[in-house]
Image (cartoon, rainbow, N blue to C red; front, side, top):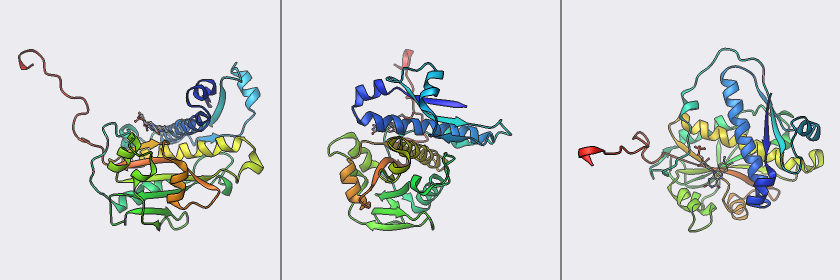
Length: 278
Ligand SMILES: Cc1cc2nc3c(=O)[nH]c(=O)nc-3n(C[C@H](O)[C@H](O)[C@H](O)COP(=O)(O)O)c2cc1C
């Protein structure tokens, strides 16, 4: 059993109410890493977001005002390892993206991997569903603009031709630059209202944890194709939802900018000249 906690005292102090969302997304990404690693050794892991918070926190000696368990990952015994090169290769594009196109087949391959069933309790309930949208910038064989992945057919359906990845971010900031350089932005979209009746306030956390798991998969799926993927949640949500034409209750939870990392294939650390060569 792996218990992932969030330090809400520190996160909310630093980020305000946004800290709740960020720490749920982060817990989801971490849970996603655990699921991937445990799955790679055949341990059949499951991530849980429904459990008795207070007794569990007490058991760990946590101060409930400061820290609480967000995700519990349960796992069977390890079987035979299935090593994957991409497990080692995933990384965020620290030097940005090269502004070159990516084939549409790469994008649909990434989306298919990210949309695969999530090993997340309470199972494949429809209210837990997240959708995938893509804002294409430089995708060969796909028109620029917003596309929605049909969960049944896996096909990308055009939504609106008038948006580019950079349009999702505050003008003049790092997000806009990253959006401009990326080949596309993938958005994980969910419904904040739908699960409230069943789960109450915890629903917000559950949905963002799920989005984090999907975000981690997007990064791994991109790495399989030697592409970089940068997770970002600093897009302007209202504007993004408007551009995506989401139905009124559905909203963008997390974005992944995808493209070939600048300088990929070259050493990431520059050689330091010493002695006579200085
Ligand atoms: C859920 C999540 C959201 C993030 N949001 C942002 C963001 O809005 N802006 C940003 O500059 N970095 C953001 N980051 C950080 C980067 O995407 C990246 O994870 C970080 O640079 C570390 O790189 P690494 O994951 O390859 O180690 C976010 C990371 C995560 C996990």
